[in-house]
Amino acid sequence: MPQTRQHIQRGYSQQRQRHSPASDVGVRLSREGIERFMATCQREGRVEGTLKWYRRGLNRLYEDLPEDKTIRHGTLEYWREQLVKEGYAPSTINSYLSVNNAYLDFVGHREYQLANQLKLATELQPELTRTEYLRLLQTARALGREKVYLLVKLFGTTGLTVQELDKTTVEAVKNGKLTVTFSRNKQVLRIPEGLQKELLDYAKRSGYLSGPIFLTKDGTPMSRTYVSTIIRQLCAVAKVPEEKGNPRCLKRLYQSTRAGIEENISLLVEQAHNRLLEQEQLEIGWEEHRDA
Image (cartoon, rainbow, N blue to C red; front, side, top):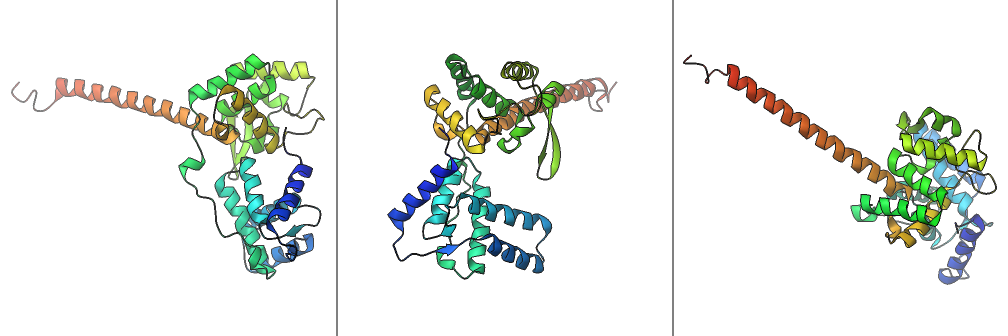
């Protein structure tokens, strides 16, 4: 089952009991403190995009902390572990840690900073093979798990990110394309015809006449944690390494598949062009016909 906010907060309490001495009172992260920090950053000339990212990272930690909203020794390390489990990219996690380290420096408590950043090496992002992807689909179909089948197929054939999952609406699927925002730029993702039909059939049987198609049982949008968890559960049955069971790996499979196809097409174009030039050389080349 996916981790709930209460479950994560219990984890912080258990982590504190294991690693933090009773004398470790910590430093409280407050909304007021965040606003003071943001105001200082603005006065120092930070651009709007940077300020928005700072606020996002601080608010994310604030929401994840237990009720006392206190950062202690080991808190950021545990938080980093949770972000990894939820499928966040190492670069995003490192950025979140950097801004929270900056906040701790701002309030004069550098002793609670986490200096070690995640490596951005390839081994941290394992490659999902096409065979493994097809096995995930086959397993989901055999188990009758239509929702996870559609999620795997959606991420693996469109390049959609989990943050944009709510853009998969009945209206968008009927139109055959999803309009998403990536790095502040709008992109249009095409939905394959077969998946389009499957999504609309699922929506109709689920009673979704409009709006987002992927919702939880209580009608709320699926969280990143929930999506990653149900795909990892499918991996366990399909004999696919669970570290590959996340939307990011599925998106990378989509990207690598397209890149391979485009490379093959480019090679065919290059070969056809060379054959054309060779034929023209035989017909009107200077050396070939100089004695004619």
